[in-house]
Picture (cartoon, rainbow, N blue to C red):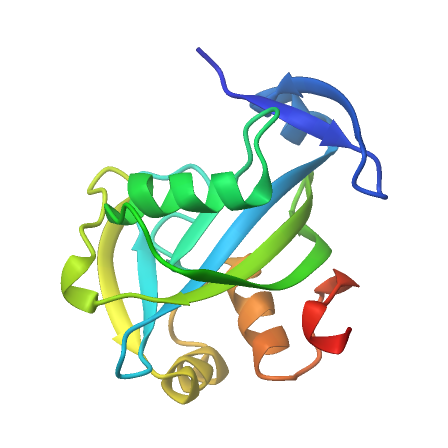
Length: 179
């Protein structure tokens, strides 16, 4: 059965629900969540998406990236993503920012980025979604991005640029650190 997503207005208020395929075909605004997980050694947990994924196959991605299901909160979606993608049942998460961004053709989302810490040994990636996990410091991840030799998902690239304070396509809606 096809996943049902909340459709939102640009103010992030739910205005309806639709199948994921139709949401993307029509360019409707919907919700997503991302997580930057760090090991105690300050290494970012970066996933390489499976080469069988429809969107950004084989690309480097956030530790977790999820569409929110209809009626799902951002935090609930983040926790679901942790378990589904990385096999992690619980991790303390801190909300960094809520933002709007175009992720690609027909993919307009209002998303929240969280960060947290996890023992790298606890990561058990879903082999259907994730090719492999790599660990890099933020500086090393920046260098990978700058070299342009490694394929990165558009959203991971833009979120990493925002995270290090560089110009990006992340349109901040709410930043708790600035409150």
